[in-house]
Structures are given as C-alpha cells and as structure tokens.
Image (tube, rainbow, N blue to C red; front, side):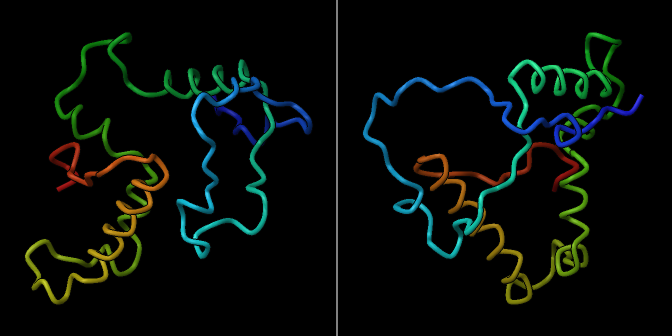
Length: 140
C-alpha cells in the first residue's frame, strides 16, 4: 500500500490544535535567525487536522520494521538511523566524494556545512550546543 503524503491529504482551511498562550516572553525568529536565513514567503505547509497527521505518521511507522512485528534483525542500529533523506543529502556533489582521511584543508566546505547546521539548530531550539556526532556506526 502506498501512503498518501500530507500534501495529498491537505484541505485548505484545516488546522491543527490551537497552542496554549506562551508563559514566557515571545521572541521573534528575526532576533534568533539571520535575515538571510528567514523565509520571504510562507512555507505552504499542508493543512490537516491533528488526527490526520498522527494517523499519517503512525501508518508510515508501521511500514518500517519495528519491535512490535518481530525481533530486530542484525544491523538494525544501522538501518533505523539512516532515513532516505540522509542518504540523499550524503550523495550530494561535494559531500559524496569526501574521504574521511582527506587533508583538513580539503574538508573546509563540509566542515562549514556542519558548523552552519549546528548554529542553525542551536538558534532554532534555543539550546547552548548541538552535536552532529553520528548516531550509529553506519553514519561514520
């Protein structure tokens, strides 16, 4: 069975739950994220009610091998931490050909991407630090 995307399920005007009012001072994204990294137009996200979104992700999760179906096979730690999106990003020109033992001066582009990702995640989540340490051996 092919699971429809949230965009396929989207109906204009459908929204998720209203969030509770903030109990801390509001801080706009403009004060946390450089202007060059902010969207100029709305994201155009799918409009689905919360139960539809939850059902969608539960259906997706059941397509994966999981402990409720059977014992995890050998190599499960490798599989569960390597979503297809990560594979696509790692295959991008400039990253795919990088060798782990190449000289530091040839790795500056990849290091810049990692540093910028860390800085962006820190700003978005309001945390003092972020690690990009591999979650599994297959990511090394």
